[in-house]
Length: 234
Length: 334
Image (tube, rainbow over the protein chains, first blue to last red):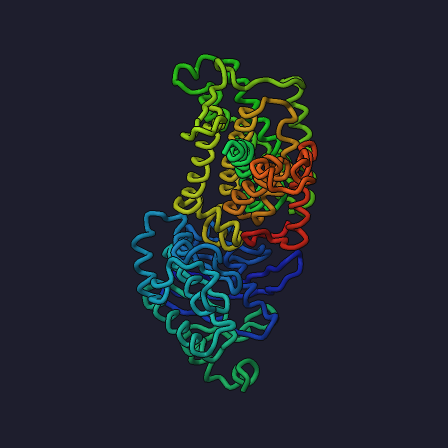
């Protein structure tokens, strides 16, 4: 049974559909990457999965259980983590408090998971008593991912984790995404830096106008001349 | 030296009393704003309601205090806090929650809270009448006179028992609030929701739970502030309504949505009020001989007459809004 499955999903804001029948399948140990031009519905798809907008048609399954239109805090309970693109930390809370909030529903896990997150993201340990709002963009992204991982999700949704980061930090974040995945967390992420993202992806979903245009392994999409021409900038 | 004692009695003690009440009131206003993002005008009458609950309970069980060696009003305070917290949660459920569910603008919530304040005031008046009632039902207010160990000082420092209770309760409130917000899971979740409600939801924090917790705390604090106020003076149905302005001034001065700022703002406004009506001429008296005649013979050297005390928070409010709208602690702008 796939970890996450979307079947013919339609949805959007205020009666206007942005998603016009999206299909996705992600296995438990995979990294899935959603790429596509601006306005294709990439971030909207992540939000639809995380219950932040109404799915009008189709269904989304987590381990075979329908989850569409469940409230986000229910989804966290069922093992889903979401890292928004912007405003993804609590700026006035310290790094440690940000991480603790991630495990709000599982307070018994806090100690063990904190240790694990500090192992994943060593810079966070040194900054643990500093307000997250004072960190650099890259470190903030680590806090954001760390916060979502604190709840021990089985699948993590990342909305453009490298947006606005310098190439150096970008590579670091991609490396950390791979590391998190290796620890057994399924990843579904939206990325603007399509080439780098597809290079680490098991599955790639190229969306355009709210529909799948190409769906294949990351390597196959990178090698496809048509995908390269239309979506990867030659 | 007598003049110094006069200063301590009239400014340090009186300012701390006013400041404590403003501080606890302003914390309530600021907490509501930080979680629900609207200016809650019914806070002052929630304070009166809390004091009224204490009054009813002290009238019902007048002997309870003597039993424990404390004023009855203080013994009844925890129960009144629970009742006021219940009222706050109930008001939210009936009046504010449906509006929130409709996604109304903050100004609609403000107007609704004005309606609630008028309703509360009317209800309290129906049951309590319009005259003043003494909340201090025990024998007499005990008055402590601390004589200073100097020959020349005749006047003692005067502190009443309710004032000492007020200082102790204020310290307990501030320390308790600090520990709650910085150590407890729910307190941190409140700060998280104040920072970023969407992310709080994405972390699995149930916003409705946090809203309810906020109202419980706000109600409890309102009961404390109202009771402290009516212990210091007497209980009246319009007791705290006139405190609305200084309390909002305190919350805004401190930085709206910032609990520590509200405490600082409360004391700042409280002391500003007492300093403004203090007769500075008293302090000049010892130097009378060396002062120019016009200054030595000036009668009252207060900045404003005590009947104009209420303009002081107004002035502070306007000054803050003009020069530093985010307040001392960089809060949000109302």
